[in-house]
Each structure stands twice: as structure tokens, then as C-alpha cells.
Length: 146
Image (cartoon, rainbow, N blue to C red):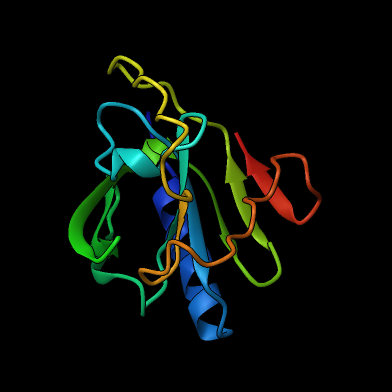
């Protein structure tokens, strides 16, 4: 018997924990053809997204996809991230959260973004603000799920 993935449930739990404690939840995503994000914000095949309540509109943390609207460079953009593409969810303020093994996609990989692209973390439409680095997969404050 095959059980559904625990990943979407863990994403929702960490998101709730962040919001309940006044932290800003960030989602680190491995981008592929099934991921709908502004391509100019992709770095090394990944993007880090602020999914906090003030940075998103109509956020839905579903079992198959994460969907929301956000402003990138002043323009609204509908974001769609397959749950399998999520690499980590963590609090911006302290880096605590959870990392996941990336799941392979059947879609072909995307070409790398040009070097002239804007920063990869979207901070309430403040793309020129200093951006934190996503936590490394091996850091002790993240729990890796296989």
C-alpha cells in the first residue's frame, strides 16, 4: 500500500509555526519546467521565495502545489510550485525549518538565468534590499527529510 507524501503536511506545519511566532517563512525551490516563477530571479537552478502573509496574496499550500500571487519588480505574478520541487522551508530570522531531498521531475531542466538577473529572494517587492542566503542543506538547524 502506498501512502501519500508527508511533505505537504510538513510544509504547512512549518509555515504555521513561522507565522505563529512572527517569523517570515521562506521557501527554497528547485526550478524546473513545471515551476512557474519569474525566470529572472532564478539562481543556479533554484529560487528562494518569501511566502509570508504580507508578501503573498491567495496563498494555497496544497498537497500537490504551492500557489500564490506576489509582486516582483512592481508587477503581480502568479506563482506555482509543485510540492516535489520544494527543497526547504525555513524562517528568515533564524534559519530554523526543514530541508527535503529534491524529487526528480519528468520535465526537462531549465537553462540557467542570465547573470544580470535581480536577487533570488523576493522581499515584499523590495528586490534591491539586502537578501539573506538560503540555509545550506547540511546546517544543523534544518531537518533533512528523505
